[in-house]
Image (cartoon, rainbow, N blue to C red; front, side, top):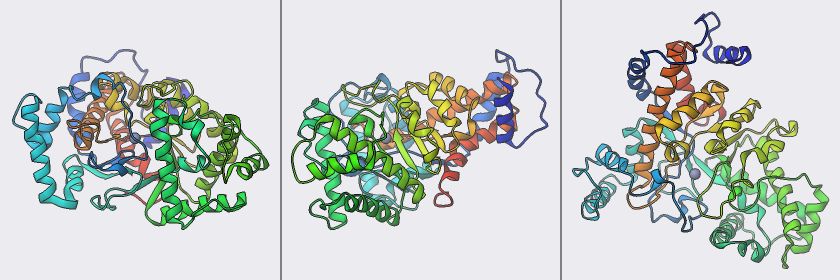
Length: 442
Ligand SMILES: [Zn+2]
């Protein structure tokens, strides 16, 4: 551990005098004992879940996009035996497998609880898992989610697709699903602002975009979210306003822009939204990991493509939260958190990785920029068995155990003291994220 990083860890912990001696490369025989001591303390920390999509499987507003048929990583399949443990913990499931016959019990149990608890159903779930507040990153909020427990993060991608999207849709089978949903999202923003066709001048289009952001913020939105990596490469060039304006003028009322013309327009709009994020104190969340669907392009969506934006001093007033921590490039991604206004979130990583592997990731992150990492579950109604409920449980359990294990090793190896470790745990599970929103969440 370099001296610079060590000083950062000390600074985070608010301790400057602790002398732990030289760090060791291997944990000692006390590591299991430390783990067992830490875990119950970590379980008592109320969580702020920085990224999730709470809702029922039949609710189309759970996300601004839908998953096309494609492969799912081993742990996120409905065959994962851990889901039995989730069902037992959450619903008192009496069986030891999820055979179709037995799974009926679970479906019925959830339906009964939803009926009995009504709008408190998801809040009760948070209580059960000791989650104080959990972000609802949704197309629109649902009336069955209490906004006091579920702060809204809305989607901002659709402003980049206002033209005829024939060419965009035709790129592959996944885009056939995604692009019409972006059009639907944009249409809903138009309805919200009483706009029925695109204004003749570009300035009015930008004013429309700003109005949507402002109104969503008034409705309780705490951040804007991009999942742009699903729709195009995340390398954004820096075109002049006149270039974007020219594309707008030529295609606002019809015609199909060339790929280059469309990208130029989008590059400008993305940067405009990033600047608005600073003006409105509206943090910018960006999907920065591998995505679902068989056509998600890993290299075009690589988190490092965004480095030119994240390290641009013109955007130092915008807070960026890199959702899913750049996975599977998380090892490089943590160095982006060196930028004062850039944070990394671990959602999805705890679901795709098993705790033993996630522990290694978390340890590296905690040893690098521990004050810049935040917890999220990416809870989502993935399928019949892995619902939003079970994915909350799996995310929370995985993160707590992996965190306890990572910190136990760090303590045993002489990197941090136990009180420092617990402070890092509070930061990751709650404090780091909450500090971003200037009192709007707790
Ligand atoms: Zn998500």
